[in-house]
Image 1 (cartoon, rainbow, N blue to C red):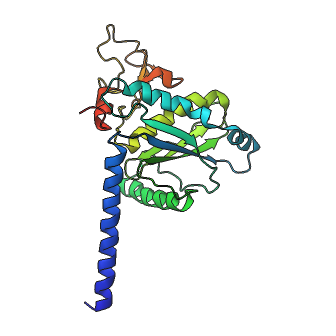
Image 2 (image 1 turned 30 degrees about the vertical axis):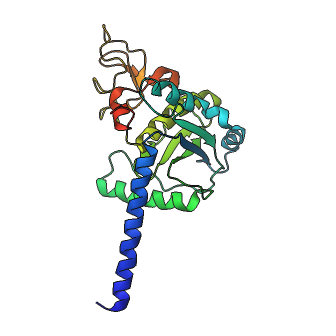
Image 3 (image 1 turned 180 degrees about the vertical axis):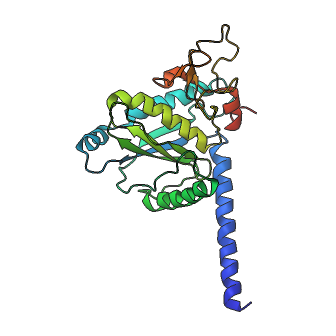
Length: 259
């Protein structure tokens, strides 16, 4: 091997080790809960040129996302955390560049990995500041015009990199349901796993807010990582707000709230 190739290999190896060390530090510090985790919401108009979405984004402020911090603080009181306020959420600048299209739920493993690489590079290129990301979750929210029977693509939270891509409706009456999706994806970034089955039904018992309830149905709240309130064995509904959600012990254990 020539000297030039040796040097190039060493540089790449050092770069890889540096990135691995940074990722490990990010994981450890974001899940030790000794300081609040910063959540920064970056709005994106998913329908460029749509004035309805532009007007909605223009009216956003920190108050729209305040229920997120209240939810995480309320849920954390059941656990022995050092920090009293686990999250501090703020609204960041608008991002004008569209992220790479997320893979479909049934996409192959290779397609998902490739999208993850593309998305992380997009995040690197389009984060509007150079703040530290050791304890910061960057939540890019693509807002769509609301419409009857309109369905949104799946939202995603990545447990490596503290980044999430959320699909949401640009309408005031959807604000609280948007916050449910944001909270769900934020928890993915710190290690929580889904608690619902392939048919989107809540898994029993982990995906039930009160699996010991008698009678079992109807449940009154949703486990946040299930995202569904079971009303019967075959019926369920989406929670209207975080007030109808809770964080169960299985999720708490995954995010290092419960040891």
